Amino acid sequence: MRIQRFTLALALLLLAAAVYAVFDFKLYPASSAPEKTVTLLLKSKNIRTDYWQTVSAGAEAAAKEAGASLDIEGPLQETDADAQAELLEAAIDREPQAIVIAPIDDDRIAQSLQRARDAGIKLVVIDTPSKLKPAPVSVSNNHQEAGRQAGLAAARATKGNPYVAIVSDFPDSVVSAEREKGILEAVSSDPAHNAGTYYAEDAEEKAYALVKRVLARKPGLNAVLALNEPAALGAAKALKEAEVTNRVTLIGFDSSIYQIKLLEDGSLKAIVVQKPFNLGYLGVKSALRLIDGQKVKSTYIDSLIVTKDNMYTPENQKLLFPFNQK
Image (cartoon, rainbow, N blue to C red; front, side, top):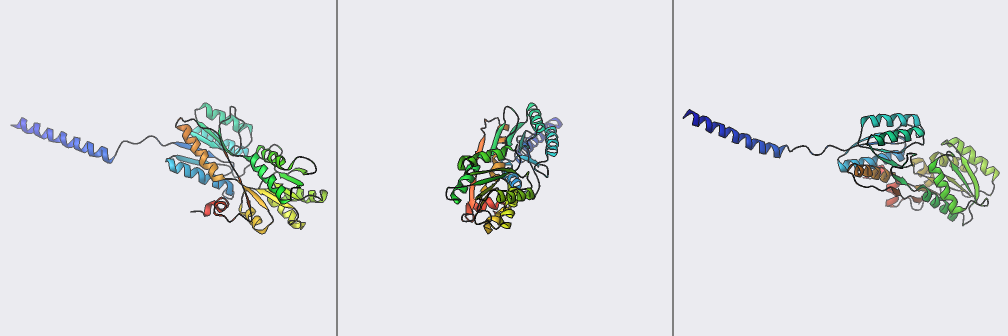
């Protein structure tokens, strides 16, 4: 009798354990696949740089959609290759599954990216090309086409007879060289239309001084194309001081709050606006697809010409004020 009771109790205990196991499995299922890990390394993480903050927002949106872990890093200054090289090395040591990088033009960056590739880390390059060969998957703005759009805008503003000065940053800047190439496709490299290219080295005051000098030496100048924000701000100051903003068309690139104000007051006739949110979003999306073993092609993102006349359209407001959109 005792044996029967013991057997019954054991059976009931085993049944209860089985039921508990079933319900416990349903309530607490086995963990899903490990979280995907991506590091985004920007040229600058400075909160005052609207462009890179918008890139970050796009990257965060893509990571959130996929439930992926995203680390975002970058130096304070866009030209600080030392800091970006150190951050890249530290990121590689953490062994994320993918690195998305807007590389500063420096041989050390390419060497570190090769180390990442050798370690099996997936690579996506955004914004500017890398020296790494073979080239990784890239997501970038079509800078040559953006330059062509700027050149065409200058030609329209000058009734088909532009005499253009280009204010660039550095002679070895890949992005600026592509923009300049596009501009000259549209306005011609003929000296009758091209007043030369001048290098302001990302310094507003140097751009200001250069444009003052060009105005004095090239009295027929009727257009200035500034290839980045410091160039545009310095050029606008020089044109205002010389009281020639109505005669000399100024066209800039990118859409900082300072350039938007110049567009509103007429100092800037147009800005070539990129889509940095798309850059970050598609950069991380490409990385996640590579992690999944998919084949991924490089992507070009188009730019738009924004003027005072069309800056208030809903589409352009989203580009100019991305953080004000819900």
